[in-house]
Image 1 (tube, one colour):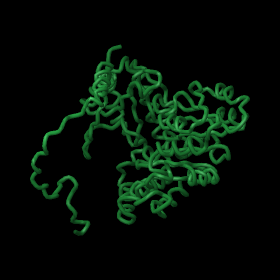
Image 2: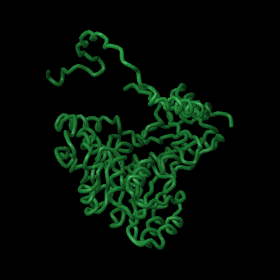
Image 3: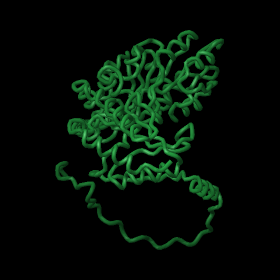
Image 4: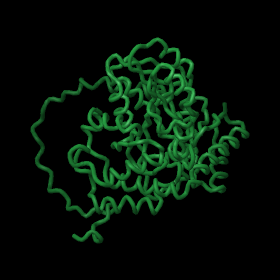
Amino acid sequence: MPQDTAPSLLHDTTPAPPDEPAAAPSRPVYGAAFDWIDEARAARHRAGLVRSLRPRPADSRLLDLASNDYLGLARHPEVTRGAAAAAHRWGAGATGSRLVTGSTELHARLEAELAAFCGFEAALVLSSGYAANLAAVTALTAPGTLLVSDAGNHASLIDGCRLSRARTEVAPHADPEAVREVLTGHDGRALAVTDAVFSVDGDAAPLPALAEACRAAGAALLVDDAHGLGVLGEGGRGALWAAGLAGDGDVVTTVTLSKSLGSQGGAVLGPARVIEHLVNTARSFIFDTGLAPAAVGGALTALRLLRREPQRAARAVQVARELHDRLTAAGLSAVRPDAAVVSVRAPSPEAAVRWAADCRAAGLAVGCFRPPSVPDGISRLRLTARADLTDAQLDTAVGTIVATAPAV
């Protein structure tokens, strides 16, 4: 069938399956092995921590302050055309791991342009930001390595520390002196890991001071810049660029392609010898199927669009700060954002869930963070400051959040 006449995914024309076969003879039911799941589910209900999937339609009418689409590029016509063109040319999937058949010329192009944009020597694209963090942490450590991890780090960095078999010390949140103290006196390899912008409260790590503490001990610094790329630094080049650390020989960063670039996937950026080491040793790279060509094409197109329109980064920060200022002026408790994440505190997990639901009923999608997703146990609404948010939409968002706020 020609591609331009292929049946729509919304109107499946697949023939109905044949009649069901006769029922098989009855067998004993062995279900007790998972009875503990019922007890865990009941505990979640009692604590108000039940989570569920909510599939969204393609044409949702909700005003979106819940996604990570900071620059409004996920549905940008140029970006979606880039993704579609890549799928048509290279296929729906990568067909294999990057070391077998999963590396295309398009992957290599994205890696070169992403490294140049962010100011690093080389880059390696993986199937997700989660996989990128696992790759970087586990490949750059070994038993006997000292790992110093910020208490507010993302789950992917935490899981990387657990898988690394290194000695891991958790440092107080955003405390370079605590990192320095842990590193002092250690003889051997050491690596400090931190988010650049923390996804819960939207605050930024003190990267120059962290780098100084690492260098005093001969340690390397690994920074997850998932929430900084496209928002911070000159024209959105990231938090490492803004801190003057991009391209330094003892610094490695990871990024996602699924936030500011509106696509999917992740990447590790750093010195060429580090990237070559990951290609040969990082299990979440070696044994994973390569990123689908459509995601690569979409990310590459979005990166080029950002280079042409660097004002998008500044607009995202501007919207975030205006959201914060207006919400706090209305009496709500919000953390002043350093990038595009705005965190508004709720009095309880149950109140946060109701607040988010009331916003949704009023036409506004917001994120809802509750334990165990938040390390301090404080439930929040998490708002995404999008660069494409109009002033009228900003008015609507603020009005809705304030009007639906729970009583403290």
